[in-house]
Image 1 (tube, one colour):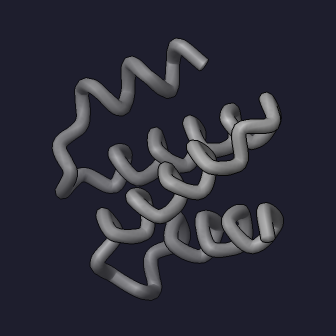
Image 2 (cartoon, one colour):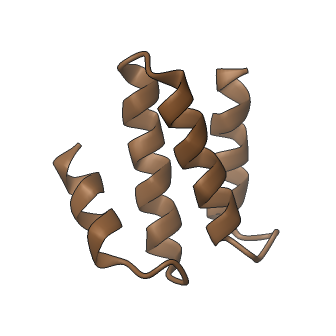
Image 3 (cartoon, rainbow, N blue to C red):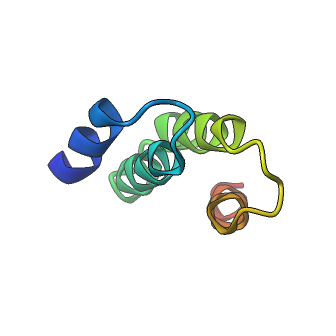
Length: 68
């Protein structure tokens, strides 16, 4: 989890690694049972990825769908 936090803090919101870090944090929260925080991180990751064809976006959408 610390790696995801470190990436999140180092990346700017316009960097695709920012979305990847948010996706990783969301996965961690989800595995810990905190679906509210997981959903929030997934949604922030989607907002950060303006390109709707970006691979991270598709992965994040799939991950978000597993929470519902």
